[in-house]
Length: 418
Ligand SMILES: Cc1cc2nc3c(=O)[nH]c(=O)nc-3n(C[C@H](O)[C@H](O)[C@H](O)COP(=O)(O)OP(=O)(O)OC[C@H]3O[C@@H](n4cnc5c(N)ncnc54)[C@H](O)[C@@H]3O)c2cc1C
Image (cartoon, rainbow, N blue to C red; front, side):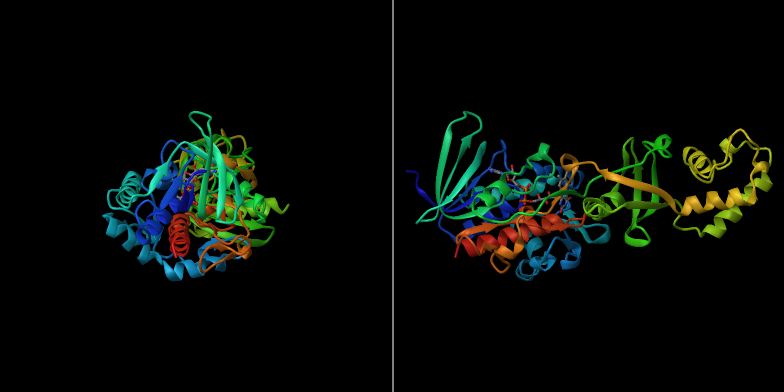
């Protein structure tokens, strides 16, 4: 029979490492073990924030989180607010900088710095890290828990005994970076309800009939997501057209709302404002002015110099202006008005998301009602704790998901080490 580990953490990702450091700092050396199925801990962390790791957000509060009960984050953030997490990193040696919209990054702008700091601290505190091991089963025993799994390199079966277990397995998003449904399976086997999951913070698939020619182009735009006449969410930033739909920060930010709409069988529509700084009437006036100034110019070049050529042609075609070999003088006032209207509210039907494998976060997960928000401990299985993305909690894009990972991980560990 293997030795009884006081605190066993399944998953060496963001919340698992924060939990390991916190638990180890309260317990004698050798009391904390982390099991990680990847060849190294923190693989996903390296990919966060485009390799820069947007590790938290100064504005993190309950209203930036979603799920059945976003208020579940409240106690963790009261105990470990953003400032506390920044101090946690600062004490380990990590300097941070704030960029736009409250986003915090390591000063070096390298995600590797965050991971190195965490790894070094785990080493200093004597956390035992086992990599290439996958936990596949968990049972409650008299003394705690019995876990079984395998060494992924040798195929050899493995067993672990633990007094307390912290499940920090993360969500299903980005399978290529370690995302999987293993955590949900372990939870279900212990009788924990888990909601259906959807991809969040992900590119969107749209009807590309009108925008095919724009694939690869980027625009500063304002996006409005609607369901019928209802405005669901508005975001502004750099929009990227792709061969399947749209991407870029504003799309990622509103994608979770779109995924939820589509999943509930409702229609999701995007309206793109290509000129947030100009009113529609002003644009109409500019277009009629251009027509007057260069009446002979062919329509295919009519918009060039005002908006990128491909966008200009797309707007004219979508407005039903054809052929583009016509001279500018042939453009009617009504056509100028329609082009201006499209420039302010170009409609795109959202047909889906770009899938779980491309998503940054998982919507849905362990039902929070079955956990104590003050400790992250299961109300069904004493001694079992859950952290991070495994919960039915998803944060907005901008450092909110890692903020949740650090705070929930630290809170669970503090309670588990008690
Ligand atoms: C490309 C990308 C960019 C992102 N950028 C940001 C960002 O800039 N800011 C932000 O706030 N959030 C970002 N996120 C989201 C953020 O990374 C996650 O929400 C966060 O890492 C979740 O932490 P976690 O500890 O719950 O899970 P994870 O960090 O995913 O860690 C879970 C770990 O558990 C391991 N594991 C799972 N099951 C088992 C098992 N059965 N046995 C052993 N090991 C197991 C996995 O291999 C993994 O290493 C990004 C995500 C992606 C994919």
